[in-house]
Length: 241
Ligand SMILES: NC(=O)C1=CN([C@@H]2O[C@H](COP(=O)(O)OP(=O)(O)OC[C@H]3O[C@@H](n4cnc5c(N)ncnc54)[C@H](OP(=O)(O)O)[C@@H]3O)[C@@H](O)[C@H]2O)C=CC1
Ligand SMILES: Nc1nc(O)c(N)c(N[C@@H]2O[C@H](COP(=O)(O)O)[C@@H](O)[C@H]2O)n1
Figure: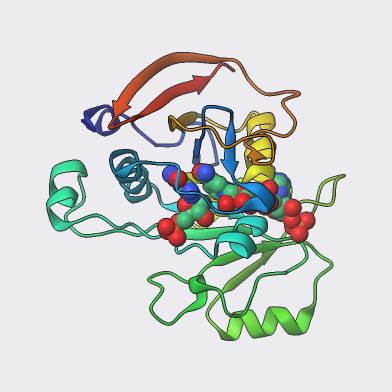
């Protein structure tokens, strides 16, 4: 069922000093990734959720925005059984991706699951030049690593600078999971090489959170394929450059 994933390579282009960027998320038939007021929804069925965890295991780092951390309190770990690990990945041991959070104002909660002593990799928090220095020290004391980067005209972390910083830290592949603000930014950035979209056969309704808030500048896709995963479909494509 997952052989299409094992045939995919997530390596940087030979001449690019930036990681391979994979954008992947789950949406409903009406294009929603969350419910009313951002309520977290389990849209993926067991088979497509497993595909997400296989993808996590195949990437060096996983990125979400601070909105997702505040809303979902995610773990961003790989949770595959030993049997699945052997059958579906090339890894001999479980490899968790490095969590990376975009958080220009350092709103990251001290109580987040990503900072628990049991978290396999403590988060890298990418912030802007204007942030609370005491909060930074507190987060660092809890194990986080804080990177300070320039911000763009909207006051958000500059994505090309983010990618070159991650590459300098030996991150060769980056899986971007969301949420809505981050999906829109990456789709428009021209920096995505692989796109994997889970479509679940449900409607959320008009009060749900749309995956893409602003489609201006979003790419057209090529090399498109569709894969049945239980009741869901995973669309795999490459943005045309
Ligand atoms: N179904 C799915 O697959 C998924 C669903 N979700 C859902 O998404 C929702 C959260 O989405 P949303 O609130 O938009 O939050 P995001 O996780 O997209 O975070 C957005 C925030 O990230 C910060 N940020 C910093 N730099 C950038 C940048 N360059 N581009 C974009 N954002 C940047 C900004 O906050 P600041 O200015 O403070 O830095 C921005 O407001 C939740 O409801 C969650 O459940 C999330 C992931 C996957
Ligand atoms: N693939 C996928 N399907 C869904 O239905 C989802 N809701 C998500 N959400 C993403 O997964 C994060 C939670 O991760 P953990 O289980 O805590 O490791 C959530 O924050 C979204 O990024 N993904």
